[in-house]
Length: 281
Image 1 (cartoon, rainbow, N blue to C red):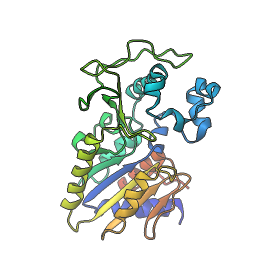
Image 2 (image 1 turned 90 degrees about the vertical axis):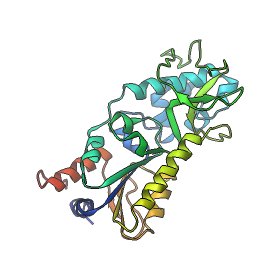
Image 3 (image 1 turned 180 degrees about the horizontal axis):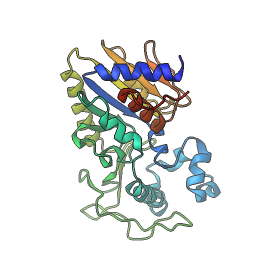
Image 4 (image 1 turned 45 degrees about the horizontal axis):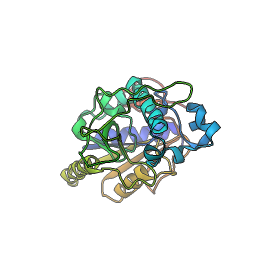
């Protein structure tokens, strides 16, 4: 199927749907200028000192660093916290808010950057399955729940990417960490994400047998959390999956694959729905 045909089919499904589920992986943030951590090279381009230390992204995204070297851990996550705060969501986010205005919508994302909330999506209709860098939890000491990182500032040396004291603390004075699911993470407090997931399931149930379009953007197969949900929902009747991915647009039978980046595909969909503009070739 050609790209214009795929976009036309996706636009037709969106024009008739009663529910729109936006599923987003790491590729969604690339068009906003966020680092692409796909493979060690992408990680090392964003964090050169890690190359010299021989630390990969999967090794750095490990809660043990908060015990072994908390300054290095908070250097990495503190830099990401400020980067994500300063990043402006790309135009595709606005398109996803505007298309199918008649439909109810929900967001399911493995991203921890908070870009959907910043783009104006209803915070009660976003499920961050891997947590959020904008929330904190205890790393050591008593469990004091999950709280907002608003007002937290981490002083990071731009040359070494190590954090300077004081490091973020819990209300009881222990070391805090981001409320993010890391690799091999048995200490993650998933209560907030579970509550969001329950709201998502209630939203899906509330659609009954109504039409549902799942628009999946930038979700790969290396960490297939987002794809797993999208694929599962294709077994639901009257559901159409639109998979937007420049490298891996394939999907289950009946799905629509669009091999474009997130921003380009969203703009093409909006142009087609509005009946103006040319489709990409």
